[in-house]
Image 1 (cartoon, rainbow, N blue to C red):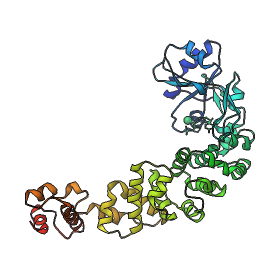
Image 2 (tube, rainbow, N blue to C red):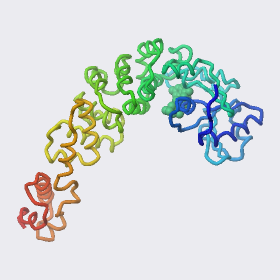
Image 3 (cartoon, rainbow, N blue to C red):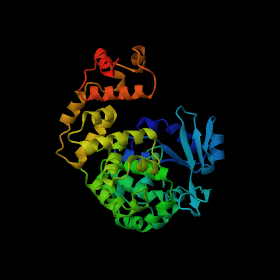
Image 4 (spheres, helix red, strand yellow):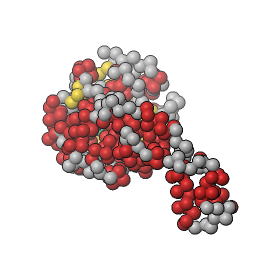
Length: 392
Ligand SMILES: Nc1ccn([C@@H]2O[C@H](COP(=O)(O)OP(=O)(O)OP(=O)(O)O)[C@@H](O)[C@H]2O)c(=O)n1
Ligand SMILES: [Mg+2]
């Protein structure tokens, strides 16, 4: 089997691989870029694995950066774009289920590949395009199957995050977990408790936005992984509904978070904090969840508060819950709002003060009332009318 390496990301790395071989070592493309290229998907992050030790890589090339030298990774800058070259490794003694106690560099490609998570992620490609498939990864790519390399229990004990990667890849690639691999996830799901929330959340976010999120969510539930995810341990019913939610792929994870908040009834801020989500995401989901709760006939104020960013999120969430939901009238109602942001209000605090309104807390209250009245269409967005309503 040959992989076409004409993709610029691969092509630009070929001189690096040739230089490594010329020095007497081996070098291969490995990991997700190989998998995705074989599937005809766009690629990113080309990873190179080599039999050369980090010190040897640094001797071959002029310009290198120690990006992760303790794990065997050196960035090579010699040929333009930087490429990470990682020494073949085998890891031993996973006492805490999330990172190896020690990394041992090895000279054998097979030793390196056999400690990788899934067979479709354990393919290697030489600079001439030859695919090296030691674990049946090519057949599994064709069968759209996620099968652990070797003994699945060992792979999940090495890094429990791999179980979340399994359900994430189901969603991202539209693949299915092979039965023994899935059974091993179900058995080892409690190990997820040892993994940081940030790493779990990164996989879950990608699961939510995948092409086959129903499949990923169904197995997130079926394997019991959800029991070890923040605030979801007793949310079987809500996740079942989330998994059943239909409709197109979600462009943004916010749609999934909004549905999760809506279905679990967990307060948005508590949910998003537990999942260590950024404040901007929390704010977006908060606005979208409030609006979702008012659909299909939201108040003008709820639409206004949602704003242009949360509106499509709430509409996509509503569509997922109810396939025949008609988003058009709601989108139109938003367009028809007298103003869409406070900056569009024909009056501000300065103007009120200039017209003799005393500064203080009352000022804020009055401005707020004016804003609500304008949004509701009760007052024209006109400075004279607003000054009059404010009593100045
Ligand atoms: N917990 C992990 C993480 C990664 N890998 C191996 O390291 C490769 C690169 O890891 P990463 O970039 O995290 O994932 P990709 O499979 O490349 O997927 P993507 O980058 O598309 O998310 C994987 O393909 C796999 O061979 C692994 O065995 N176990
Ligand atoms: Mg990758």
